[in-house]
Image 1 (cartoon, rainbow, N blue to C red):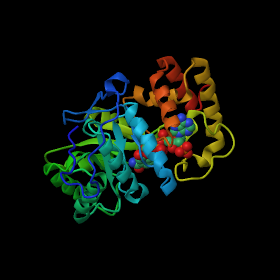
Image 2: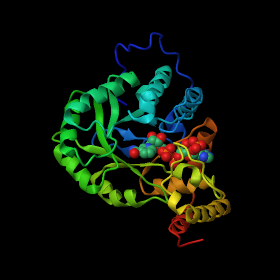
Image 3: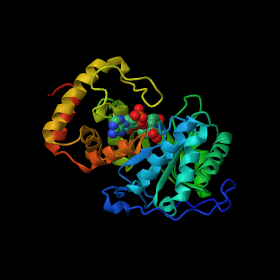
Length: 332
Ligand SMILES: NC(=O)c1ccc[n+]([C@@H]2O[C@H](COP(=O)([O-])OP(=O)(O)OC[C@H]3O[C@@H](n4cnc5c(N)ncnc54)[C@H](OP(=O)(O)O)[C@@H]3O)[C@@H](O)[C@H]2O)c1
């Protein structure tokens, strides 16, 4: 995609190593097929989010880089981060790994987000420049407003973002956690460009936000990216019983209905066994069938491999309909 490296990155002196043999995304079923608004670009169908990777302890950094490197080798080309993830460490790791991956960087959709603490007009440029410096780039493909803040008018932020888009520092503008009303407000503040993405919480068990925005986004050609598509592991068959350990990657919003949801997850697990697909196939293709792009997390290369195996196994429409009914408490 369009992102260029910064001409004089200050923190890296060595030339990039040769790109490891990475398969073309088109050979892996991961090719971009969703138009990214009117930008003329395509949005990959499956992405890797870099929030939980590593959990920000120094000892986890090698594992984080290994997972990301593995994602690149496996053909993933959409990487999502944010200035708030690990207080900038996530952006740094992504920048470093992509720098070493050679041409993969220019083929990828690199996404970062403006913090909800930096939505005032005067804060937007310094926040973006900080992200670009950590990523080691002169521009980012897609820049999302991480979340609205009711104390800051949406138009104020969008006008500041459009100025940066005109300068070429942002390839495209998107938002996250926006309702239809907030999306409409954001779009009407833009003169020459449009919002191309809304990233929302969306999985079989937590569907309110996605369900609310999806019809509008479909109609308007806005890509819906689903975060937490695997319910932090619950929809992979993990945590089918017992408690879920507390941790930054596992703060699922389902704790208050955990027993009920675990019962539904056990039924989905049984359905997946009967259909001979991994359980995560139900979760991922339930989204894919709606035209939504899942943004998964993985904290090890093995987790990523199992997610890619699930992605490669598409259940039939009948199985997906049954899974949908089970997740709503109507089936099984
Ligand atoms: N815009 C926003 O406000 C927002 C909010 C949240 C997330 N996001 C983005 O969305 C991305 C994904 O979110 P998420 O991490 O919540 O998504 P997720 O895919 O639902 O959960 C990922 C977690 O599930 C577990 N997992 C994944 N594959 C597994 C497997 N095969 N077997 C067992 N467990 C597995 C891992 O947990 P463990 O690490 O515990 O093993 C992994 O960290 C984030 O990285 C971030 O980029 C955005």
